[in-house]
Amino acid sequence: MLYLDHAATSPVRPEVLEAMGPYLSGVYGNPSSHHTAGEAAAGALDDARARVARILGMRTGDVVFTAGGTEANNLAVKGIVLAALEAGRRHLVISPIEHESILESAEYLRRFHAVEVTLLPVDARGRIAPDDLTAAIRDDTALVSIGHANNEIGTIQDATALASVTRAARVPLHLDAVQSAGWLGLRDLGADAVSIAGHKLGTPKGIGALAVRGRVPVEPLLHGGGQERGRRSGTENVAGAVALATALEIAEHERAVVAARVGAATRHFIALVLESIPEAVLTGDAVHRLPGTASFTFAGTSGESVLLELERRGVISSSGSACAAGSDEPSHVLLACAVSPEVAQTAVRFTFGRVPLSDDAPVRLAALVIESVRAARG
Image 1 (tube, rainbow, N blue to C red):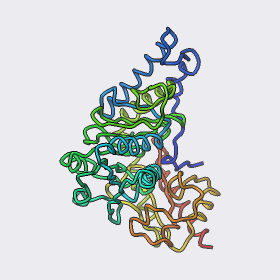
Image 2: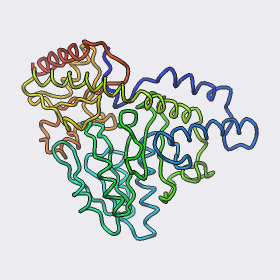
Image 3: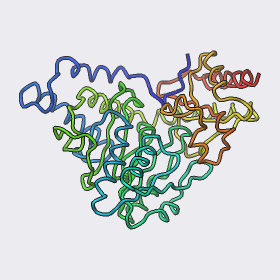
Image 4: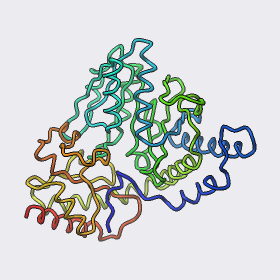
């Protein structure tokens, strides 16, 4: 089987399992408890927090552990905007190609707190122009929230340029880095808040983090014992935090080599598909894209039919975001990129992981895609 849906989730790394093992058995104390067992757990939690902060270019106290990327994005968008309402700032800027956790958080704020939401335009490649962001920011803007790299088409935003705009306007910038973590450097981008998710990096599902600078007020979404410096109550997942720190460190250590290797294989695969299937169109930015993401539309076919034909041939891929699985609607990302609904419904996404494939894998995979598209056409 060729598993090419790493943007949805990746297998757990053996090193991560080994690192978290002791905190699933021997070191089981509650990190808030004031006894030896609790202090041992608290020490591991503090160490994991410092390790995550170091890679994200944040202070240790800025890191809030969450149950995953969706919670981290909800805390960033809702938490920062809700905290700004008292000061009269009730305007949020996002783009139409964001992950559902951003879009739905914005919709919640609009419906229940009368927050005005501005959707930035994106071009056909899914890129945001800094000038458009400048024009969108107002005196009452509470937050700008942008995906660093898109989960469906892989397009990477110029985060540094966007951050220069928000910094000049003194508006916090949140980057959803769930897809870019481990593939791109996250330090020195100028963001005030960054979301990551462990299961994209090789941890078990159920752990993530929001790193948000201490100067940015955040209203907690979960109330209780005041854990995570009052920003996220609830007994912390110590083993998960250790797993996240370990996976993030490994990915960062390997990043340059792995990104180059995977990027070369992905580009080879893309070229073969485009050469062999006249109807194939690469979606997203051809240059500014994640190393392991190859997404196409195949006009005249059904994307779901192509996926079924691929799976019959041992290839696991997807039509887009796993969070929109089961939806009959065309991708909101492709629609925002001016792809017609009929063509958007033919989309297929292949996302490569960090584990090395054989040298001939791009050629074999392209051949299977060609077969599958032809079979789907009947």
